[in-house]
Image (cartoon, rainbow, N blue to C red; front, side):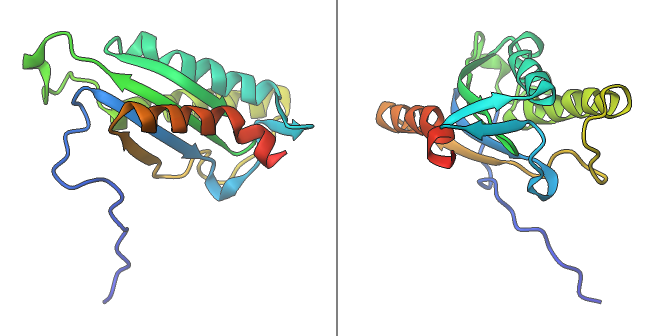
Length: 162
């Protein structure tokens, strides 16, 4: 039997808990536009989009070694820059160390749970099986120039799509 293999989108042997900057894109399953709409180049969040923005903002509370930088919630995805800093270099690789994957998983879980409540209580649009795609896209930001290019991309994403 030939089973389809999921393509690996992470760098092999890269420690995603190490200090640095990461550009993330987290997309809804089936690209469903659930979080608002772009009008005249401005992203207008609906109540579900405001909820997603709230949970993204709580990543720093849950993971104190993470700092959120530029981010935007779009109709069917979120772009954001996260920074992992290390207070104690002996923490690298520890199970308690924050990783990009742990933060994304926590964010997806918390926002999906609240979205389900919103479907039941507020009539938000239903989704099939998953709110978020199983994977997410990440890019390791290696220098200051790349950081500013990505931050500008995030800021100008709504006008480009609107």
